[in-house]
Image 1 (spheres, rainbow, N blue to C red):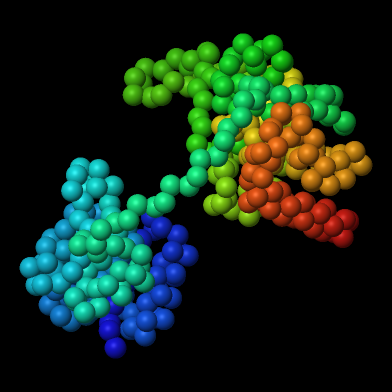
Image 2: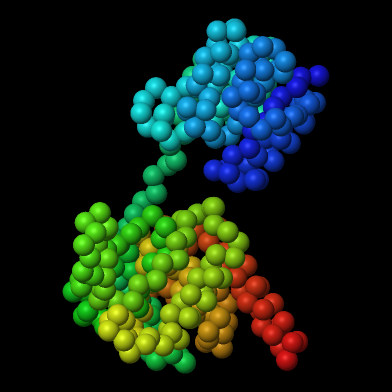
Length: 325
């Protein structure tokens, strides 16, 4: 029976660590943890254990041990060849030759002598033209404001924001940042980034366009959107944007993450007019001028599932509140 040591890193999720552990146990291996990556690599080089894996460690904590392994005739994972690799850290694998391939497969860490096959390039998705922003609902029932959806070009256009009286912007994208600072804070600290007040009240949700979002994240977005509309801004000089105005919900393209959030909000806030999530999505596709050829990902299926999950969570929350009363 092979004996492997598995190092743990806080830079990766516990789930990733447990997946590697499960794969090693399925191989019939014995697993140990000693708490020192440098000592673990030395032990593999000496032959005390058969292999060592750590999902992420710093180069200065492992390069000497990996050199010991190679000098002893063992196999290792890839060693960084440039400054970025040295300073960003790396996954570490070291093993006796007879078990190295099996350990590499279980840990999903390629060996240094393996050619890394690039991931297949997914087929390009056609992108059809659409307006920078689109009016989805005028004078939305119960709230008295207009709801718009937009993409990056619309949300970055300060004149367009002013023209449509936007007081609130909710950025759904984690991969889009915007600097709207028009009144910069006076600060002697030259190393600080520009910060201060901008033309809108800006809230950021930070969704991934596809898989990878936490199950409750879109539900949190619904409450963020609702809370932004309810928020009472203090009458103080440091709070420069006190008007509510209309609301613009954006992501990079304005066709997936923003569609999912607005559809969820409209359905939950006005179920009599929009009885199903699908009804609202169909309306938004028309208002946003989304092409039928891209409907399968407007929004992405994973985001539609998040919205359906959010509806169930909200209904359960309401039921609990009623029960408590």
